[in-house]
Picture 1 (tube, helix red, strand yellow):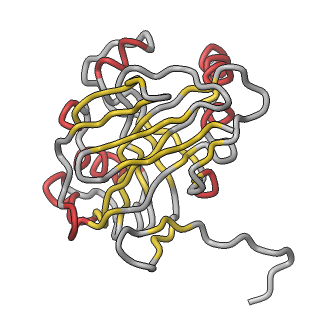
Picture 2 (spheres, rainbow, N blue to C red):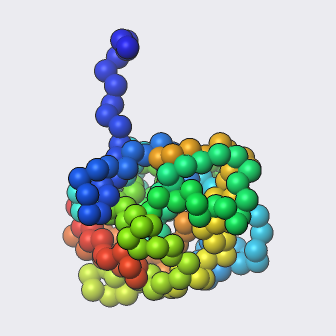
Length: 227
């Protein structure tokens, strides 16, 4: 097929234990999925309907470096469990949702908080604060066949050796099967879709030179330096 312009390569996540890659189609991010984080952001932690925003596949970054972005003086880390889908569909039942998961990984939803807050006040979408270049540092996908399904496990983010964020995955308000099922009511999910499953409390600003280390039980660690 001929194209009128040069196309960009498919964005792929590395897969732990193999040279094969996981091609990424879409990235869905759930907001305020831990009660303590909802509170620290000034919201009610009650279980309301979930909401999602999107990042772009080419926002993913695998170099172990996070370039401090332009137009912001208040960039925050948000440590998250990544969920990678191997199959999709619409109206997926909760009790069948995990059948669609290929694997799990570590990710950071880096956020230009000052710009996001401006958009919130104006009732505008968050993309300028969320979906900027290299805003989603992440590690490899660990297949379910190797790590199983992660419905619990310790999550911790350290910055320069000091713990900033800490929680258990079982503290998520909306669990992974519920997220998949809910999304499939509004979108036709497909192989290659990725979900970032929300962040616990403790989000805070980073500066150039900071080193962030995210760990989740069973998934190893992800080290990212702010440059």
